[in-house]
Image (cartoon, rainbow, N blue to C red; front, side, top):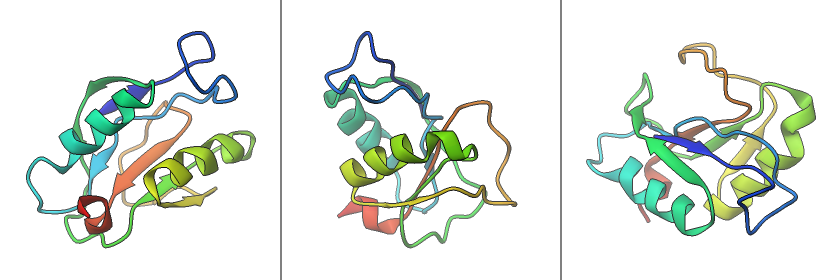
Length: 109
């Protein structure tokens, strides 16, 4: 799922990062759509859904490959009850987005 968010169309003007499509890291059908709907309600423009390389992720992580996006990643992680990290998972496909969201089984709860 691709989610974009900017200060001009946001109920959260402090968020300036462009999150990537949240990627479903589980075998739970429809999880990416569920999170896409949640992000849409929170003001994000969700464009598409996608899958992570692994289907055995337990905990949702929000990655900010650029340290300058760490605060925005933390805000998104807080909304998703997830963990924010400043590194990028080596086994995942690269993204041009500012933030990468990998959904774990905890996102289904």
